Length: 154
Image (cartoon, one colour):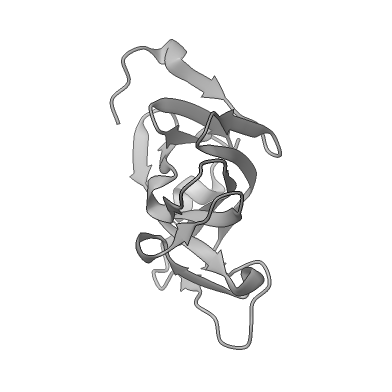
C-alpha cells in the first residue's frame, strides 16, 4: 500500500466513528489476538478461523460499517486493512462479515451492506507468535476509499 505522504494518515481510536460522506460510518470496535476467531454470538453451527500452525496465531480487527449511501455496498469494498509490526513488517488481511445477528461468518465478496444498515466486518491475518507476544508496536492501516486511517493496537 503506497502512500504519497505520511501526513495523509489519520489516527483512529477504538469506538471512534469516522464518517465518509455519502459512503459509510466506520467504527473500529476492537481487535483480538487468538488461536481461534469466532463471530460475536456463535450459533450452533458456525464458521470459525483457527490457526493450525504451532508458531502462528490469528489477529482480527473488528469494524462496524454503516452504509450512508443510497445503494448497497459490496462488503469487500468497504475497507482494506494491512498490519504493520515494529514499523517494518507488513501482514495482509482478508475479510469476513457476520451474518444472522452475529451467529456466523460469511464471505465479504458475496455480501452487501444495504443503505442505512450496519455490517460487522473482521479483517483477519495469521501472524507469527513472535508478533502476537511482542511488546513492539503493532498498527493496523485501514484504507477506506482514498483515505488511510491508522489504528494503534499497541
